[in-house]
Length: 420
Ligand code: AMP
Image 1 (tube, rainbow, N blue to C red):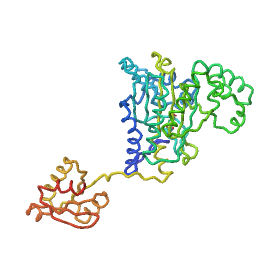
Image 2: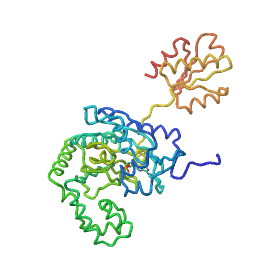
Image 3: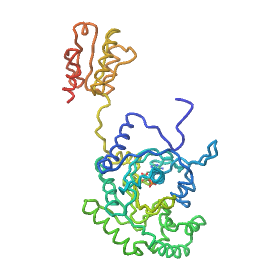
Image 4: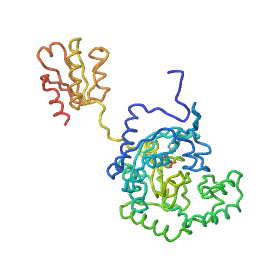
């Protein structure tokens, strides 16, 4: 053990668990790649103002959870707490929206940072796969993204997740609702912080997890009763498209989510095996965000799925992914001359696309065979000086124990046949 430990709220990804993590990340992204989403990467930090404006001045993320820093040059930066604001910033900067082909569909995957109180499933450094469809107002686009997330979870074998769905209205109907909600909330017995929130972003009070607050919210006006005709029709279409695709959802009229930029469709995926940190993914429509960060009007929709929590959801359901063995073949040289010759064979096998490892460090036969078994390889290739003089290596099937000599020139071909 070294003097140092991973910082609080973080953890290291270590083999073999890291292979599951990587496979989950790939599985979450796979449906997006089949649906016309292009891969995108943005920096791990941005101008702090981007998040303040884009995520919202009144959100926990901005007021309490950002890792901010001032550079030597005096720039105020923040480690990215989420992906949408950065991706939209980058898309606008690259003028992707001016190509005449809207929506611009993008996906990304990476690390995000929030100074939260750590607990199981809630980390200060976590990983998301995200998708954004920028520049189109079409219920089919909202439905597409939700269906792609459901397909991703299903492809991993997950069953115990639920989709919560709501509409947050738009600039037509939300102001009147906001005022009605504020009037209701001002009559409640709330602490000072929450009373301030009532004035800045009353919708987020609906999201308050505290029992004492939730009890007082019974009878609060709900947005679904205040939606304008356009928002109602839009939401109805999203619901119909989901149903037609075999995607079940639960209406959750209090679903607000922690970010300020959402409009209309809002959704969250929760998993029932995860305790209090049950949200495995979420997203929604953010028609006003582009203008909030200085861009043109670009109605958009997106989601982010948590990789860490999806891995925990797999554990909760007892699902073990079938991952290919990291090593198919393990080479065991007997003696110095064989080491050189077999190292060449290893390189050749790898170049032929066969995952191969080598007994490094000059271990004896026993130690090297132990290494072969631990590696999970299906075959060992073993050679001593006598084998090499005869122009063969011994190919050992590590499942059956059967061993056969194979001419050096045809090792790759033989292994490819046997590995299928
Ligand atoms: P959000 O950006 O808050 O909508 O989060 C989207 C998803 O990212 C959530 O549903 C979680 O699965 C995941 N997530 C958010 N915050 C954390 C965190 N602190 N630790 C682990 N996963 C997180």
